[in-house]
Amino acid sequence: MLFDSHMHTRFSADSEMKAKDAVEKAASEGIGIVFTEHLDYDFPSEADFTFDPEAYWKEYEPIRSHTLRLGVEVGMRASTEKRSRAFIARVPFDLIIGSLHILGGRDLYDAEAYEGKERADVYRQYLAKMEAGIRYHDFINVLGHIDYIARYAPYENPDLTYGEFRPEIDQVLRAVIQTGIVLELNTRRLGDRHAIKELVPIYQRYYDLGGRYVTFGADAHRAMDVGKYFREAEEIADQTNLQIVTYVERRMERCWRP
Image 1 (tube, rainbow, N blue to C red):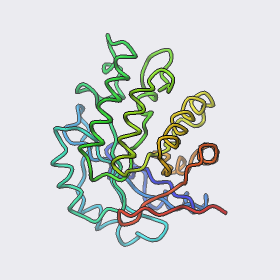
Image 2 (image 1 turned 60 degrees about the vertical axis):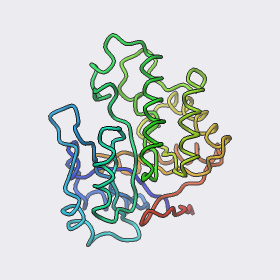
Image 3 (image 1 turned 90 degrees about the vertical axis):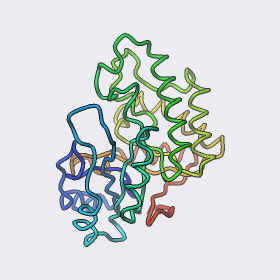
């Protein structure tokens, strides 16, 4: 079955989703799920994007099953890498996602991160930080939402366009392949046909460079969003010849489809 391998329950500071609701929604969609709570030390806001891994494991391990796995989404920054590495060793997570949420000390969700800055400069810095983060976070399994910046950047064209940023995107994709991790196909923006148009060349290039696998992740913070836009994601995976996978006990597992 397919897995939604990226979502957040109440153990993440920006979510109140109940595990029970996520499980019920996944069952109705006929998919498996992986909880991936936020771990982002020293986050530049009042929110605390950390959690107690032992408490997390104690609460959710009894419901862990072949259709429910337990993971974490680690913020990739040089200043927090050692603490993140120690954190993930405390419990036997099934899946570790590495993501970039902060640039220049600012949360990419906030407009202040872009003030007075040219789009091209910000995006190139974002991609350079992402590549570096992949290489020194050698414990991650998956690179989360390569197009995260496109969700919030206040520019007229927020898309991460392959034709415009080809050298920098290629460096990120090569880092993914060379380190043996997998690229996530985050479905959050797949309700926008233009976003799909811009994402397909990135995933095609990933395949051309030697990438073969993707995870799907809706990045849900509400049960209603679990598995959202998976049909569109399947179309992209089929178009780019990428195999859909998930992880269990840090080992890759291929997803099957009826």
